[in-house]
Image (cartoon, rainbow, N blue to C red; front, side, top):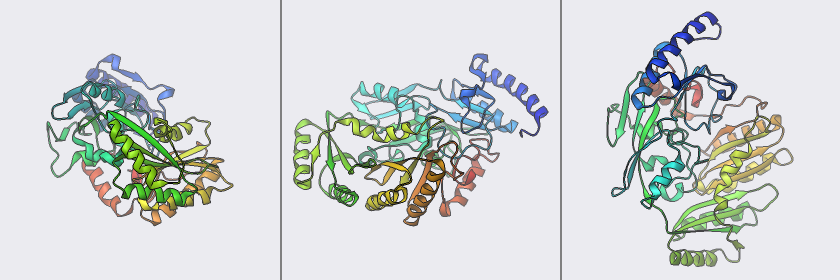
Amino acid sequence: MDAALPSQTSMLTTTLEEALRAIVKEEHVRAAAPHDAFAGVQPQFVVEPGSEQELAKVLKLANESGIAVIPRGGGTKLDWGNPPRRAHLIVSTARLNRVIEHVWADMTVTVEAGCTLQTLQKALAQHGQRLALDPLWPDRATVGGVLSTNDSGALRLRFGALRDLIIGVTLALPDGTLASSGGKVVKNVAGYDLPKLIIGAFGTLGVITRAVFRLHPVPKATSTISCLARDLSEAQRFLLAIQDSKLAHSALQVRCVAGAPPQVDILFEGVEAGLTAQAGQLKSMLAPALLTDPGPVVWKARGELYSAAKGSESNCAVAKISVLPAGIGDALTTLASLSANKVRCNAVVQATGIGCVHLEGEPGTIAPVLKSLRAEIERTGGSLVIAHRPATMPPLDAWGDPGDTLSLIRAIKRQLDPAATLNPGRFVGGI
């Protein structure tokens, strides 16, 4: 469906609306409002299916009608990735928000994609358990959105990535199939490991409807200690020394604020006696560096950088970087050098080498800094993905060089979504 064909668009809109209402009932279909627009694209309708079966039928209808679908959970990361080429229908998972089954004895949970992380964690906490995951904005971010954007925070260091926590998933494919992999299988898609395939795919392969996770106990106590480094080289040494030690830390990060020395934060979890012993060992190892107890607020620093860039008037950009753990200091030094006297930069990078950088300045100045930083990071095998950019910033692909994997990614896209119904253009290589 093209904007150049207004008469066909009008006919299709009327027909589509009637068909959508027949699937999900009248009150769950509405015309898209201005606040539903994103990345400069205005959808036509918003539909909220109440079951996996309804969602699958909606996708099949859209696929057969040749219209583009944008899956939406909490809407917290719609500005991530490239703008879609088309966006006619938003399919919201707001009504798919149940914690379906918490098997606390086996430490697993099955949850619908529209459930927020905060709601899920509260349900799990009743049995002293948690999903060991700390994504951005847990009060609004949904399970499906977190999986689709591969959003994990500092706890990834100890408990692994989303791929390590998920053990099953169900998603609706554009042809109306409900496909599952892992626990409680409905239908398998032969040859594909669905949980690993859909994580970070930005909803371009299917719409997640539910997921099964392995869980961990809620710690009895936590403690955060920060260490003030003289420069980035020392911060890098601290990171590597802590990682090479026998400390049982759950999270480790370096924070860089423009005009201030870098700080290294370490999170301990366990019982009080263990935390005291860990803190003593850390002080002995890093002496005579200045150690402070800032409290858990430092683990919100990543979210603060993303939140600070929100807003149509913001002259800020945020990018997710991924480098080797031993190259964190070099990447941050490069960032400081490129942005000197041009833009103001802040950064939070986890010891895994994954982090975010926040740039503030004139949009025309931010773009070349991001481009040069990406080139340097990619040269050493890393990546830089733009999560947010000023509206007036010169065009710059969100993803960068996909390398040799692009042909494989495109082949999978053709197999599962041959009509490019889902999020067309938002993912790597314009997929």
